[in-house]
Image (cartoon, rainbow, N blue to C red):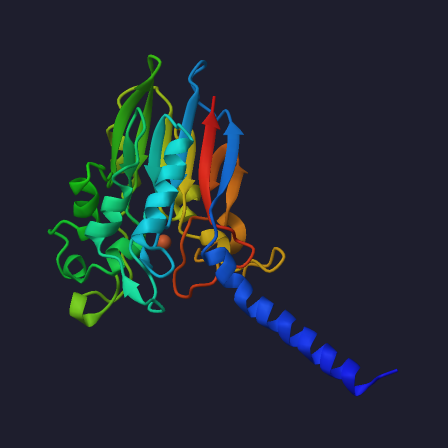
Length: 299
Ligand SMILES: [Fe+2]
């Protein structure tokens, strides 16, 4: 029987369910990151080279969603993975207005200063690190503030360049691509359209031997152009779509839609790993796109 009491109970439960659904995306926004582990032997790999790599992407520092304290805690978690090398894939800077405060670059970089691995910490910048840097948007001769902040805590930033590292006597290359959509259009910046700072040939030009190459590229859209010489490409930027409704990802910021949204992707024998990252851009919502630290076990 349909009673008044039963109807009120139904309303109450429905209201609770709606409130839970409305609040749920904030749960993932503030969630403790998962460790997404990928084990693979990429092509052109050196036999005997075993490499453990921890990857952080899309920090998007801001209050209350990604405070300096939360960044510090996440970095402690990364250190506990005891990786050989730690890679940072860009977008340290907040990319939204729904914040109670911004975290200054001197603060988020200080929070990341404790990252430590035997082969060091290496970074590239992301689009938001450039977009929020109005001085750099006007004049590309100045050093981006995000790059300066990382350098100040001893973290080198690779922009269209490569560095050679060695583990157990086996060499490998880390290549860092400049950001593909770094420069915003606008009359005040003297540009009619978006411009990238990426130069893939220059990034790979400094590679002087046959050791495997790992390419860091903030946006995965470069992947179809990456030559077979590169063993593995690592990207962030997509946040896994940030909103994933049972596999439907309506807002992946990529010209390829959901093709490179997250995870390990293999195309024509070439390999790409895209991290879902840690923070949020545009709005503080994550739905079925849990924040993650990527752990690669290569070899
Ligand atoms: Fe990004």
